[in-house]
Amino acid sequence: MDPDARSDVNGSPPAGPGADPEPGGAATTSRELYWRANLRWVVGLLVLWFLVSFGAGILFAPELNEHRLPGSGFKVGFWFAQQGSIFSFVLIVFVYVRVMNRLDRHFGVDEKRPRSGGSPGAEGEAE
Image (cartoon, rainbow, N blue to C red; front, side, top):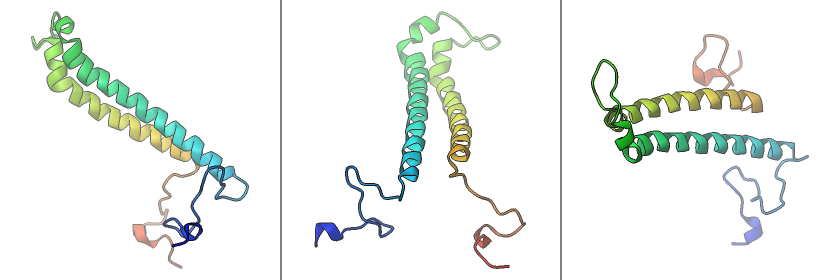
């Protein structure tokens, strides 16, 4: 097979170094900015999850175990190892969804929902 005849899933030629698959280059730049913003949030939230789950539950557990949760008597380090990391993960998921929805709207890639009460697959149908 001729290497120049290859194409991606959409039938477009592969984008090599310096290649600009979109005319004008604006879409490529926008996609790159979107992806960079996405990666910054993913890395930041993963670091936060690591600090809460591994850091508070294991590394800093001896220091945290000197304190107890009010009303329960559980040591704080034990609580983070058992429950806190799970609660933190769920909270991080909600933060990620909210941030990504905002990023999607900002870059114009948000999901368009039909305004009429039609079925989700009916967006492209003629009325």
